[in-house]
Image (cartoon, rainbow, N blue to C red):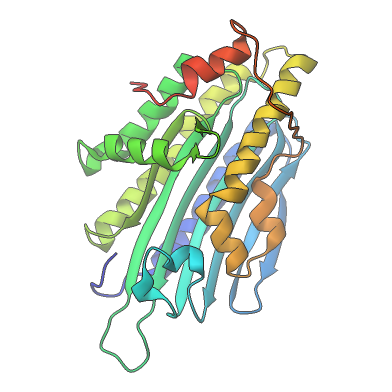
Length: 307
């Protein structure tokens, strides 16, 4: 977190609004069906634009949210690790995308970029604190090595201009963050994740966030194009629904963005648009050894160096 000169909130907001528009336009071109637009306001301060597709040709459900909210004090999800910030006014803005394709051979994908400002207490010389966060990750149901490699190579190329070690750090952080701890199981094949980004100054941190946001479509779209026409049946759809249950468990138990949105009085429909539309749970189920479903667990979910 930084206590340097005040950052340019207007520039961040303008970029996030444009990013949402560009990504949704690219996804509409892939699907052939338009996303619905839902503008909303928040009583305590701020609002957002939710862009959602349901029952598309490619996406069974997909959403791209932009929001900027403010409040009189940070919620527990944001201040628990930063007790000095408890009680401060805040501004939070970001873009969050979750795409759930219908074809089980097409992976679910998530991308988020966000910016927080914790304003100084009234009557003090404190300049306030700010930080960026974000990342993207891939959740396949049937794994393909070339897809995981392409996604991770895209993440690395976005981060390489900011330091040779940046991808490795953020890849490891992603593996640790997207762990379903009560299962001891990864959510997917990971990607990159970062938070509390401020140490390099506003301009460099903002540039990194833009690099990540701008890379999402090229990281994800080629995978969809490769897999969208693969034939599938009820077996594959059933396994997809079972694995989607893991996605739900992570989002509702651990995900900081979901918890922040709910604790800060955000719009519930927009927060929970990340959940898949068709999900099943089974008691103590496990795939049969040697099946494609078993290979997801043995070959793709354990963290590994994809490059």
